[in-house]
Image (cartoon, rainbow, N blue to C red; front, side, top):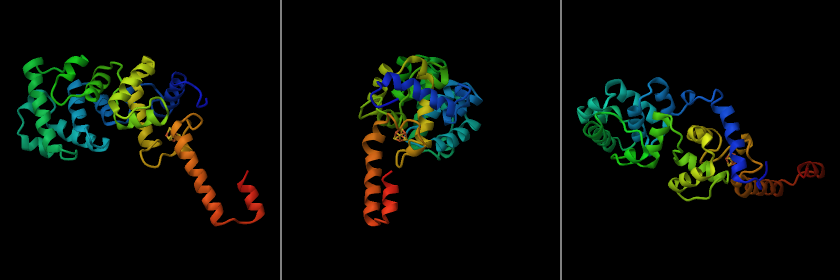
Length: 253
Ligand code: SF4
């Protein structure tokens, strides 16, 4: 596969490679993200909704810790709606903006009780109308809570998609729209889990481990940023220590 291969051809190759690495049984319940683990233990869209709100601008590990602490004590809309806010703040302290988020999860729990008898609605339009629910949160609830194919797009999915040349976008929202046009639906359910794992493991935000990646032959970032930078560094190194004729000829091979 080369850079000339269109995105539609690269996607099955990428998805199969990542699935073999991170989800060999093809089951989202075996995922490693905080949401996948929570769903594996209890298939409850409400817990997915609350965890996703907690995850906003927060590392996955902290989301998992806060979610576990919270759900050990309060795990229903009634319980969270009626909880002492100080207790919620204390339990979710591992996540960023925990004071605001304590109010937000209490608020959304009350709306669910008032409008949906304490259940989580299962359509994108209903979810997006809830307080604190944007496109990413709505899509996470649909994928992890209801098993509906969507493409939740966080910073990892946005970065990996752009580096690989699947999209050329400035925001996660635009990336989501482009991916929904380009990625065959059969891959939607797993793309969030796989790109997040890949983005944390190999295609890291700073210092991507391109030498351990299977996609260098067609990756836009590798071709335009990583490889030229490495060539420049090699040239500088050779200039600083020219070495013997033999070592120069080895280096040029
Ligand atoms: S080659 Fe490097 S930048 Fe490209 S996808 Fe792989 S790790 Fe990311």
